[in-house]
Image (cartoon, rainbow, N blue to C red; front, side):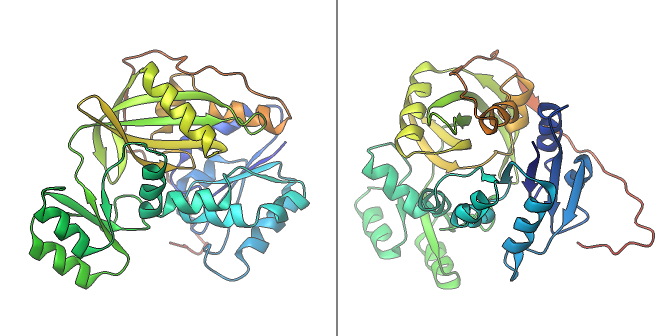
Length: 327
């Protein structure tokens, strides 16, 4: 069994975890469009590939899957999830399982306004969102929403191009300057994150790891502590099985006076997943079992509380004498 990790980037810990899960069973192959992506050097083999927007990209990935006899493939970046989901049948035809949720669900998660409408339809608490500036200003006049708010791209990640807005003038300037912008209610409650696994065979949510976020950096959890909440576990199980998701999921939530608001769902490994892994919530091992045709049994909340994660910087040094540097 061989696993292909696409767009590995700086996610060294994920590559290492899969090497451990596959020890004696197979190999981990990684790709990236840059040879300055440190995670690729942790894999058993790696490929430098074109950017996902370039013509022929998917053919290149399919060729790698054939050559390396890949059993399962997944991506660590949002835009590639849609591509994998859209091309699912082409991977299955060559014996490779794309570990990703269905295309429409992936697209909904990537489009923050579509996600907001889905949560409202399901009657799940979530932050108010507006793509119509005049509707937002009207609700503001009727005290249905208050400043400050956030202006952000409808489709985006890693907190890129997010602005805190505190006046009508600021909102008007941003909407005039950017297309595909929306306004989101400011959530000032305690932020939480959940790493979730939905079994590929049974479709059941088998594992949830919940963390209270202490500090954020560049849109990712920088410091956090493990916690448990049985009522929230039940809500997460119900949501992810109803939609339904597949494989690894990352959920962001806010506790607003005892009510949990679902902010985002990313159908992939979250940036803070190494915290869950260090606490024994081993998604790579679960995925390997699924790819072997084995169903995983539920073990929700089976980890210790008050275990802290503290990220810090590491460096990767490589000799590039005689090699082209691909940034």
